[in-house]
Length: 337
Image 1: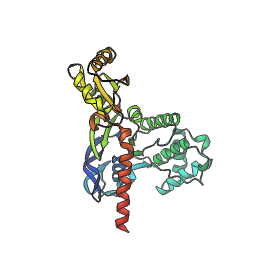
Image 2 (image 1 turned 45 degrees about the horizontal axis):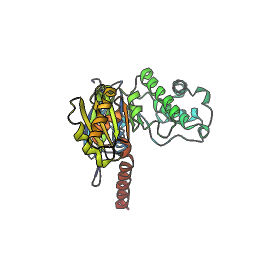
Image 3 (image 1 turned 30 degrees about the vertical axis):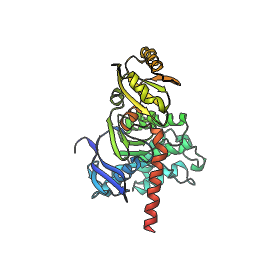
Image 4 (image 1 turned 135 degrees about the horizontal axis):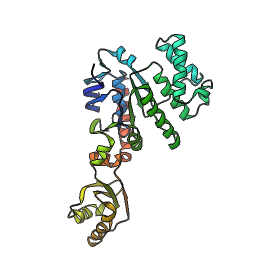
C-alpha cells in the first residue's frame, strides 16, 4: 500500500435533478490534516457521507485506506472514525461510559477499553470530567468527547464534520489545539469540513475549496493566498460606480487582479505595496467622479481566494446554498411518500 489515505475518482452524488457533488477527484496523504472548505450546501458533508459509506455515490468511486467504499464497506468503517455536525453522544451517560460503550461496539476487550478510555480522555483534557453526565457538559466539552470517541478504536482516518460549529471563538481555539495534538500524537489522518476560513488556514496542511459541488481550488493555504498577491485593498463604492472605478484603475500595471462584489458593493484589488498605492487609487477615483465610501487593506486571506475562484464571498453563499439543499431534500421526501 502506498502513502495515500484517501483517493477519489470523479466522485458524484445526485439527489433527483440536483447534483450535490460533481465529479470530485482528489488524493489525501497519510498523516495529512486536510480541509474541505466551503459554504453550507457546497457538498462538503455529502462527500464525507460517501467516504464513510453512509451514502452510496451515484457516480465515480473512492478508496479509503486502500478499501473501496462500494465493495469493502466494512473494512472502510473499521479504518475510520467520524465526528458528526450534530451531537451524537448519550446525555444520560457519563463521558467515560460513552467512550466505553463505543469501545464495546468495536469489540474491544475490557482491559483494552479501560486503557484506551484513559488515553483519549487525557488527549482531549477531560480526565477530571470523565464521570460527569454528558448533560452537564458544555458544548465545547461535548465536542472534545466526541473527538475522543472517534479515536477510541485507533482509526487510520478521522473525519470531522464542522467540528467547531456553534462554539464561541475561545472554545473553537481550544478545539483546534486538540485536533492538532491528535493529528501529531496519534498519527491519524484528519479530514475536516468547515466554512470557517480562519479554521482551515490555522489547521490544514492543504485545503480543497468546494463550490456548488466542485473543487475550484486545491493546495496549501499559503500557496492559495500567494495567488492573490501581496495585499488586498477593498473599496466600498456602490454598485452603480463599480464599473467606472475598474475602468479608472485599469491603467495601473501594479493592479494584478480586480474582483467585484455586488452584495457588499465593493471592489477588491490585489496589489503590491498596497499602502503606497491607496493615494493613487483614491485620486484616480475622484478624477473619474467615483465616490468612495470606505477604504481598507489587508494581507490575502482564504476569503479572498474563495472570492477569486467563485466571484462571491463565502458568507454571501451561506443562506442560498443551505436553502437549495433543504428544498432538494424536501422534494426527495415528497417523492418517496
